[in-house]
Image 1 (tube, rainbow, N blue to C red):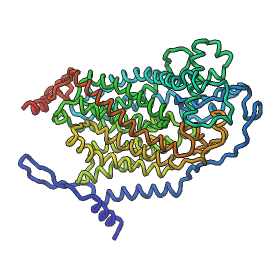
Image 2 (spheres, helix red, strand yellow):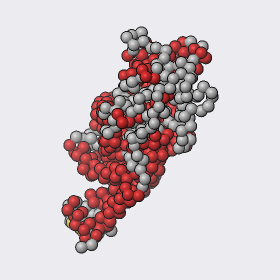
Image 3 (cartoon, one colour):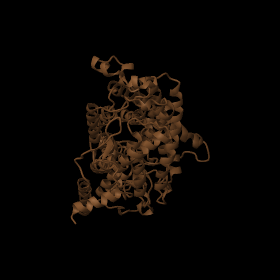
Image 4 (cartoon, one colour):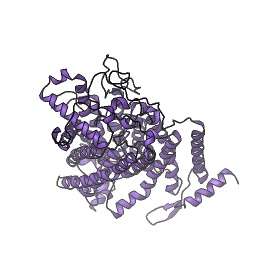
Length: 602
């Protein structure tokens, strides 16, 4: 028995052939279709992928951790590695920064700090262009499969994303300011049982999350003191510098500022909007979309504040929970309430050949820019690993898309709608802390699982949601974003579940921690990556809280937004999924436009 026979036998047992017969005409005549693929072809693809995984396991060198750095005694004042003057020990900022930002400040002799000397994968503007391509062009083309909704798909997506990005730039800066107020309230503005002291000795710092928040609150208080009296910044230049970075400000004024980083924060806040848009596509009008978009950005910022700032979780390598899960469940709530009953059954809710080809172009664009999206806020030392692991996961999810789509069709024929989503599911399935710790072969496996799960969800879960729960998802956002993001979340928890006190050093301060807690892969600092770094399982525990908390906030916010959108006038059921109600359309469109509306009215 050859390899082809073995693969045929296995696949026939795993996947019961559901078809090969389809309705031939209105009288129900059955006809047999000829397919260009067999079980042997699909089995060969799977065996080839398994062989590649085996090569990666055996032949690729992997990063080993935990590291075991040589830890000297505490340096005293004026000693090498110790403080030059009696200044407060800087605390890790709650504000996230891309590589290249100095969160410690320059050295006393004017030399560049260790953080500024870290390798930076790319320049800021290149990242901005690629993330903007992902948000604006990739999503727009990926959603362009509807046969009579091309103008609206492209333009309404651009409209709401442009407004959401502008609002997101301001809103995320407000969230930073709001968090400072929250921290100051916790310590009664430094006048409570724990007053802010001018200096912390290294041996006094325990590194617990409560203590980190207390020291962050004291830094916020310093920023407010300098805001009231600017002369303090000349007397305490280093403390002032760190106060700006901790609170996420570029000056000591109560104003918003425009930087590349803030613009990218606005773009990231727009991604959940685009995910929600995909679920509502064709069923609501532009005014309803704008309302949902603004509500989505507001609730995205609040959820980010809860899970990242308040709980202390980490989700800065693609946002599996704060972006993909949030956007999916917010969209579920919106489409459940905002969509009119029966709109998804409009005959115009269907693709056409040329539009599907354009959609695949959008998929390829998102495929190309996904690594930049995942890697922007990753630690400098791990940026390359995130990019590599994202690409490897995308490679294998493409294979999974072709394999599972062929199997689920029952005729070994590929389903364009399935492939358009599953091919990039690998990028979502590693969009967590997993991509930092993963070995290359692990990224390939998780990407393949993500692609397979996306395809399975497209064929079964989507159908269940529509028939049983009346949740209509035009583009399959649940399959592409929610399901693979859950895989990323679970894989990330597994990867950090074994972090214990072996990874800790005896110094927990930000300045000195860089010299003795480099125990994570690529010599990254345990206590500067994770806010919960006590080594007692707290890292995995708080990563675990992200998914349920985000799901609850997103679903509740989506239901409220969808309810509000119901009171805004949208298209009638008969005119959904058609450009003609919003646009002046050319004659060739008008000649065939009435097909769907006549069917709905008859």
